[in-house]
Image 1: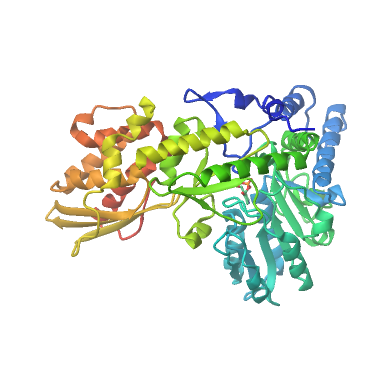
Image 2 (image 1 turned 120 degrees about the vertical axis):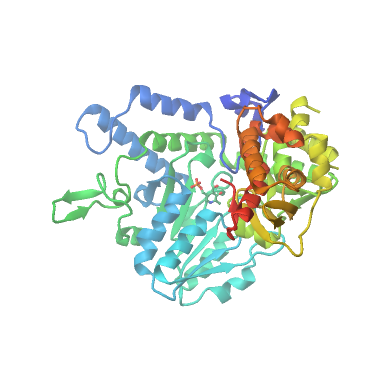
Length: 406
Length: 149
Ligand SMILES: Cc1ncc(COP(=O)(O)O)c(C=O)c1O
């Protein structure tokens, strides 16, 4: 069956709009994707038909909502093929998931002189929590460099992984360049030396089928808003042996087994890490988004996006003065670029005038920009609902910018 | 080309971007400051010679978008020969121009008024004010890096 992109588009009400008098061409999908009607309806339905606090009521509404929330956890677990739904902790997103691992897992284990290894292409979310942890404990942050084409320089990994390494944190897919990292190999190397590994999957799950049991990292994190779900909800996957030992992240209601003024027994995981009333409708919307992706088929979405990436890349190569930043052999649907004559911010503002929304700046990856010796890039990124006609609109707008600044 | 677009990227702005005035470093200079917009990576450095309270000469260099480069370039022209008090008053008026719909000072601002177009692009206001913040920092003699607010 061929991919019917118009049928997909029709499910996204926001795409029917005009912006600055032009049809919206939304190409900022790596920052956040738009939401299909199925997700919008699910969240509206929770509020209008089935909502109460969870895990505390004996009444019907609370019980039903609890069942739905727990089912959402199962849906997220199945999405990445986790063995058990209890291995999924709901968080606010990839950022909070990484912070949770830094505080609850690593901090108690880390000593002065220990090392944490990240890579040069990480999002700030996978740098700063580790950096602050190092500062608190007198540990050292080490960095795996990249090659000029945006791939990790894996030849240098063995040198960085030592007996002092207490965590290796690596993006599955780079948000700024689109590089798909060979995490299978990287996880295997970490394992061979008993080094815990966290994979930042925020940019991977929108485009790749993830089999957590096959990959078997210690931790895997991602966000709902990048896979057609609500913002403010995300997930942490962790191995059971870690979940059992990790200390609570925040404390309060919902994460306890019993409380006296002298002592508190914590609930079992994952509740132990979910203090307070959670984002109930967010978790249910997250699951609705996964159902939607499964219905369309992640492989189908990925194939469509890859077609757009190749189509756009070929056209970009024809544009005078345009340089594509990031030329890894395995790439997701991200195109970072520069123009000789126009700064990324001017490109962004001018494209906006054509109704074309792209991201410009450092993409929360300032160290990567420094490494590449550039102040910023313009970035177009594609999702399930984008079309070749939108790529044409993008390219023609870029040609206009070139003329004006030429 | 859109009328609205022409309004922001006017010929004057494109020209100052391509041929920035007073570009470089004054050697020697009495005051200096750096400006950094962490959001977009724009960096600017300002050098200035103050004689008494008059800005005798002013130069900038750095890497930025057309809006920040043109704004810095036009600012160096506008502030050369002004007193510190006049410069600070102009900064206030410029800030009002790019952040509000109040256009009462357009006449006083002269050529600078064309940067008023950025008021419709809130994310770009910082680009237009970066050099001004740096000058403000330099005048106050604060050695730290100026940040856009
Ligand atoms: C690679 C990567 N990691 C982490 C994050 C942070 O995700 P969130 O802001 O949803 O917590 C992002 C989002 O931009 C990302 O692209």
